[in-house]
Length: 239
Image 1 (cartoon, rainbow, N blue to C red):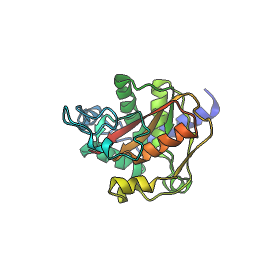
Image 2: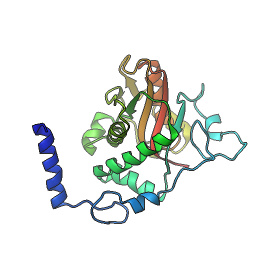
Image 3: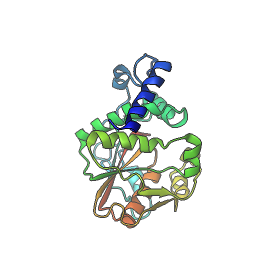
Image 4: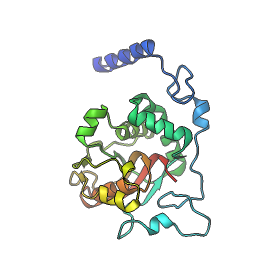
């Protein structure tokens, strides 16, 4: 094992000895998320829109897709294993705001297992980027940590630097209406020219509400990055 890997492993062991991991939901010692709590997470079960994954009554059209940006959605489709409620909401908040970065491993593992069942076509993964200023303040990009875990488990390459966030937009949670969310992310992202040329991209984020951020990323991946298609995978979907 190379020296940096040894040091990294020793560092994790030392931290585990000083601060033993505990389940973020029930407090059980030994793991960041125990199997029992993972099994109780609220699942985003069908019937759902095959495009935006919002709940849908059988035989009815999708209101969210009908209200999407002019020209329709750039995303081929979105999939999320869980609804953004209860334990799923607690996990996303703990990872995103409470510096509980170790949750990326079990959460990413659950996302990878879900992808194996759904089989969206993908050649490469791309995380939704944070603005550098916000990433410095948080210390990490939770979407990158999740995408890295999914990449490792599915043995798919990770195009970590394909997308760039050029504008530090206000958090989407403050823009409640779908139109406001879309306006909030217009021009917020760039993609390295040809970064994913001809490849099917699976865009990874922690949570989606209206899908405005994901769709804005998909548009530049297609127009600037040369992607052949873009799907999105998030841990949770707000219904």
